[in-house]
Image (cartoon, rainbow over all chains, first blue to last red; front, side):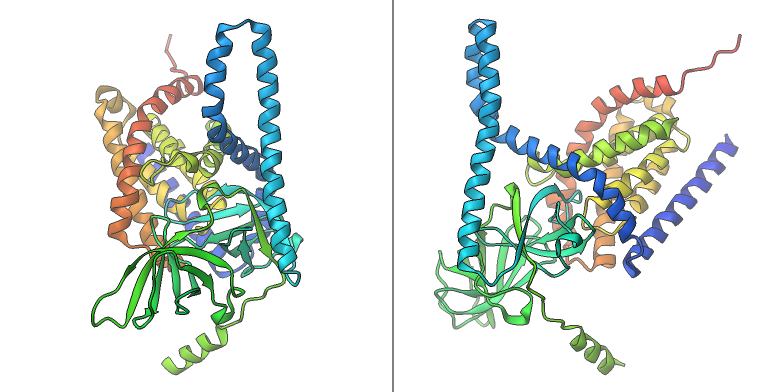
Length: 287
Length: 167
């Protein structure tokens, strides 16, 4: 008994030590990146299949149920044929949805001929309840780099944070750690849009003098050089302004449906401004 | 032998957690399938297998996340070690024990996740709000999941570890 407990303690210490080393090594260097790429490659098709299956299932369950009930009352042959047709319809609907998305995307790209883009499928959503990231099936070998903005035809999705050879990890605009410099279209006031734990958006640091009204659109301002200007982020649903405060806040409704992202576009020829030099100066002043 | 079953099972659980489970959230929360599988196995196996499953499952979870690699293993291994302290026999005698262990383990995992994400990644996650709106609903999900999962895994465990009888 005692021997088994000792064995368990040694295993605990060894596994915690290895996990800690992996954590530190991954944070300090890119040495683990080839390994991550190698592991992610075979996972991609399975993850994509599961994500697509879950999407199709949630979209079509209601539509299928009454047909199934009716078919049970009819003969087996008709049931089989109808099932075949339904499978075909599900496939065709997926193609139809892809067509609409891609044609909307083509319209967007026609309006922005200067942008070089890569379109990718969402293959997984973050396994942590506290991070709102997605993984797509495009990566470094497709020209994607950390910092590249990610959009859909509707508006801003987020930015690329990590890459492997064939995958990219994208931090969504609704993630807690996301901050986007934005401008309200009608009020012409600048602020910062941040993600919230519940998956909504909040625009902060809006000057008190600005007249903000419900329905006003928040667009990327381009300030700070982290995102191109004029990408739609969200729409104002409520405004909070306190007397004596320097700034006001607005709750935004995201324009992009972050829960059902399937296809996203990465702008690959946009390089975010490198502000590390300012961080170095601040650190230098602090010493 | 256990790892030959454990690693593929954890792989499937991690893939489900990254693909299907985000679609079925209730009140913004979803079950932590990998954690629950590791907890269930640790409840059944008083030796080291649960910890090994937790280690492998944690790495797979982090591969499918923006969290740094190793973070989930670092949290799950000690939790499964504590759960493994309770003997399988104790669990058979007291059906409430796995529920309590899962509730405690889930809470520890979520608090640890927030603290590590804040310190390692610098994520501005408010602990109080995270506990109320994410950790507690997820804990309820996990507690609901553990009993049916234990029923299934018990059969697997019996196959992998047949009882030896002295003749």
